[in-house]
Image (cartoon, rainbow, N blue to C red; front, side, top):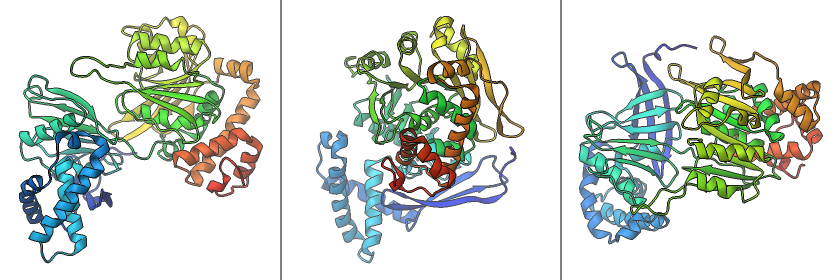
Length: 505
């Protein structure tokens, strides 16, 4: 591994579709800059054409008669888009007589997208390789966080502060929120699940800002996590064994360390016969479709301060729905944590995320204000998985896996070693081994053998590139239904096909 800048010149290049629009991306590194340049361009759409299209926007708005409800109702977005596309094609027929029909369709898509979407920001928002798209004011270029290359400057520049404000206000209007000088901070969610934060100057000194954390259309699975070397197959198998036997875990880590993504990836380890309830502020978790899954979301109060549904409300309600498993987006407050640990003590298995830098800090956060859980209650928790984002190297790793000892202390079983970029076992199982022996009837040798078998399954999934959340779920479900049959497939190294799913060959 190296923290040296990438070599000069072109370091990556690819294409994708932004709706119907073909987009080219070139990522380059120059001597003059310390970060790569993310250069995005639309094929067949030069600056001159953009200027002409911008002049047509006013005419298009005049031609298409819409009321405010149509523009703000997400259920009508397809109908509204069709209206604009039809009118846009007529305008293009009038102004671009010699263009082919395909070229006109491209221009119509760009015109409609720039009007109904977020203008210049729409293109990077469609790039699945990006995690964040941010605007730091009109005097600076748009920045993006690339999954492979980290933070990059782009060739996009929003022309003025008013444009940034209009984008933020447009996002707010669609969900019934306002951002104004008197209310200069806004959190919102786009229709695709992406989270948005916006601020206005003078609160943000250098100009209006927008931060978009993109919602991944391809849910994280354990295979995707293993491919990126975030966790070792052996550590993943230990976590799988814990989850199979209904032991509760907390996923902790710093901001953007991949806590929720990791929580999503291990969601496939649940048996298909269990009822699973997820509780989140914004919809990020996606489980296999064959599971009995009930997703629930909190709700902010309306402008009059009414209608709020909190995490605590949903937690209390969820316990009345006979859940076998509870997944909670993030523990923040004392009462939420108390309900969660009460749920663990009454036989529910719980999986949640928490902001903390390591396993020791996780215990400190749980037992001190504002959460303040008595240390004696921590016995109900089986283990802590710590996620870590190495900003300098641009990688995410499982930093630690720790078991909870009697009285709330920890025993770190595995830890990431920076020098070898590997996860190493540093202590033997203690309480976890006793718990698995008591409730699953497993001896230490049987625990080791079980982990080895699960490791084989995970490596087989890796080799067969089984990444889709539903197919990963089917493999795990097939394992639970008949372990011997699944292990025979793995040991023979048979290729995966959907016919090998829940119902076998």
